[in-house]
Length: 182
Image (cartoon, rainbow, N blue to C red; front, side, top):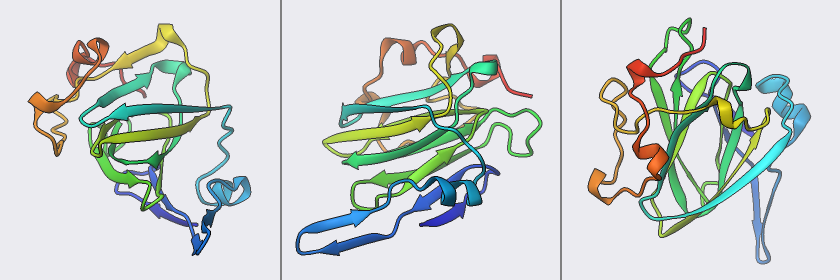
């Protein structure tokens, strides 16, 4: 696998080696020893999966305080724009975001450490999205930042009137009203 440090410290793009032949393909999706050597010791405890249709925007979610989660995300079917926003006040990139396209074709993975908000937008007719987390979901610590917050300024490739949001995501707070990490 190829580990590529993004412009935000701690956020990584991972490109697997894919072996194709007449039967299909084979790849290693996760290798703990290699992951630890490049990124560090992250102990994933749960795998999650979602299926969404075109225009679904999930996010920008995070877990507050001690409930923060690191995530290793990828797309099994379809294509998404995946976004991570730095909520670490002590970081030189506080309030900045990085986005990457993840798809079944490129088979890339995106590692987002603790201290970030995360979201994705489905760009294909349908997407199956899977991710590993290193901390259990805690409903009392759940938080969301508005997808179209002007302070962050994410450039979503689909017009806002075509986006499909949950009620919770539609009611998310602005970046200036969010809880940050130290």
